[in-house]
Amino acid sequence: MNSNEKIKECLVQYLIQLSGTGIDQGEILYWETEMGTIRTFLNRISHNGFTHDAEIYVSSICGKRMGRAQTTDLSNYGIQRVVQQATYQARHATPFHSFPVLPGPFRDYSLTKKIFYDSTRQVSSSEKIKMIQKMIDQSNENNLKCSAKMMTGWGKIGVINTSGTLMVTEFTEASLSLILTGEKTISAYSSGSSENIETLNTDQIIEEAIRNANRQRLPPVDPVGLKGKEFYFDLILEPYAVAEWMETVASIGSNGLCFEEGESFVSGKLNQRLLGENITLYDDGTDARGFVAPFDFEGVPKTRQTLFEHGVAKSVCYDTLLGEKYGKKSTGHALPPFERSYGAIPRHLVMKGGRSTLEEMIASSEEPTLYITRFHYTNIVNPKEGILTGMTKDGTFLIQNGKCVGPVSNLRYLESIPVALNRVTHLGESRLVHDSVGYGGLYPESSFVPPLKIKKVRFIGNSLNLAD
Image (cartoon, rainbow, N blue to C red; front, side, top):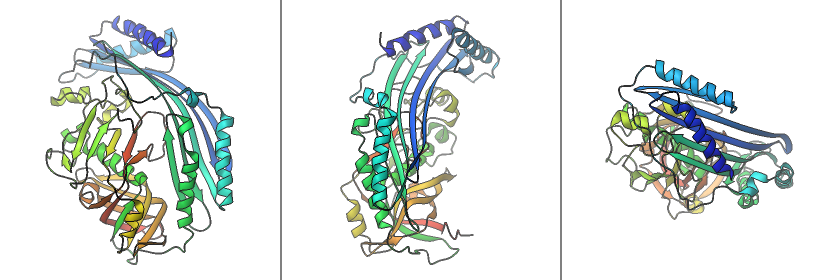
């Protein structure tokens, strides 16, 4: 019996215990992860850690009442206790106006992409250290300091419920992110990810960061010139920056909870053009170009869902509870139980790209233009208008007359991103971006987005002189 079959057998036994408490409906989520992480700081290995966690989340439904509980104690006593806790809460919780039938039955799924690799799960720390040391040597050769994080991990997710759903998947991940620093203002970023560590191209990742760092050896320039006032720049955004914008915008704009409560810039505007005609965005957890997730955290199979087509808002995301409340079907976007209060959020974005290269975008920039590698501390200012703020980070340059003039200090923007996406003039070839904000974690989610050029984005200051 393989490990997936063992988990299925355990889930069936857990559900039998839960059903024996006299509930009307029940759901159990099993989530196990194993991660090994190596970190370097200024060309020295500073951390080599390993974690292994396994939890179950139990949801009990009695009539219109629901209770939830979770535990890391997977002994017989631990399972009995968490089942009793969830059932007790269900019998004493405030009732919903109605309650949905849990989704299912779902039992089979097919993937066009392999998502579990023994090579990734079994890679040793010594092998990873060799990869890290090679990058340290390359950064030393270029008079740079490397601060990096390499993570390899394995995960298993299983969902069972009283509607007949029983879904289990197993996946791996190898990811690398690094920042190169040097004299003066040099700070350059690069990252990459793959299910298979054997295809994780560490040479390409370090070379990209070195190229970015070498651009910053030019004398720094001050592009602002308007102290204490707002100012506008055309932007060239690398996919890291685009992913952070699109993921944040989708988390409010395409979130069914925000939409129904009138807190989304899409609320009341379905089938209207809100973005530029050259912007098409969809969510697809089965797209082989990204990290694949065959089902959501309720066991609902993933499918392709168009969010914006040629700028027109086409749909938003729901889980089962949201769908029942607002008369919609689940779109397969349920979050883990402890995150469901945030609504239903797309986590596998794909944005259609174009044929422009970054070199062509730079060459087309006669007016002062900012080249931005990525953003930092992106926050939502006004969800109804899609206004975000944040800082540039790890590689911001001034482009003028088709050439890179030099690096600039980090700048703070304040802009309605949906409005700005009506001013996109160039789109490049899309590429994979995983964990754009760099918080880590282990779940098969990603964005597949292009670099782009956009006109007249609003800035309100820089790291040395923020506007009043």
